Length: 196
Length: 160
Image 1 (cartoon, one colour):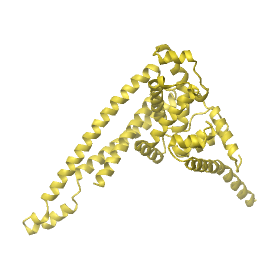
Image 2 (cartoon, rainbow over the protein chains, first blue to last red):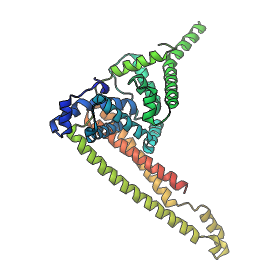
Image 3 (cartoon, helix red, strand yellow):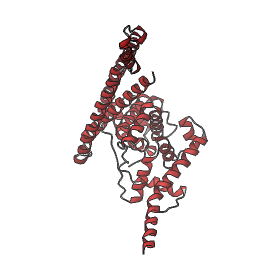
Image 4 (cartoon, rainbow over the protein chains, first blue to last red):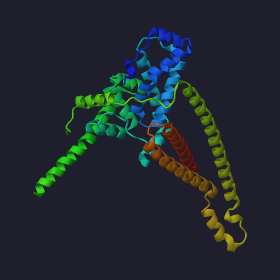
């Protein structure tokens, strides 16, 4: 699937959509909706919330289409709207309550479905799900989307140290979670050998 | 699997995970998106009205309970024999109706969420890509919102 940041729109398509041409606006939706959902789903995990945020992002995109000046690729502009919508959702007390309740009920936070059948990627996806939404977002934006600490700090309205510490914390948690099964296996093998 | 993993390894794995993701589409199309927004705004307005009505009822109930407690003060109860009983009722003078109502609302919401979870499990098993799953997930999200609101109202009334 094409990444949201890689999506570009020709100036003709854009001009038609900005002028309110229904066909162009629909074509824009077809091009941008799935990659937008994909990145939001990576950050938010809760599928119903991710759909709601995708809708908010796309509607905001249509409402501000006239403000897009083409200084950055179109996909990057939409991605910045999507990330800011996700961060707004994370700040909402209802979202925080829901995350707490979801953790308590141990449901609603399914790992994102993946074609990958290799166990290391499945483990990594599970480990990502266990991170807090903020930490997961920082890790994803830095490692996968290629954001700098300055860009992350600006979008979170925090300092660069915040971004660095969240990233370090996220990496440590991921390493821990990914190392745990191997450590257990080594320990089990050791005790088995001791038994013989 | 490596026990020690460098930051570069981790970043490379995350990128592989991203590249391996299945294409996913929202459950709504272009036209449905605007209709869905309209529905959500209507539901949000309805929820706001319900929340303000609940808050008003809670305030009225709390004020009523306070007036009742003032009226039932033991020094205003004339017969000595009934002072003990009056004290017992006053010392336990919680706004009982309010608490019973929130407990019932919480229990009802928990039951409803559990039944939606059951339906969701069935829907996921038989039609994981169907619209029914999305509809149930959306319903569950709304119920969780209501649940959080009732819990918050409970907390506020407990600290009033």
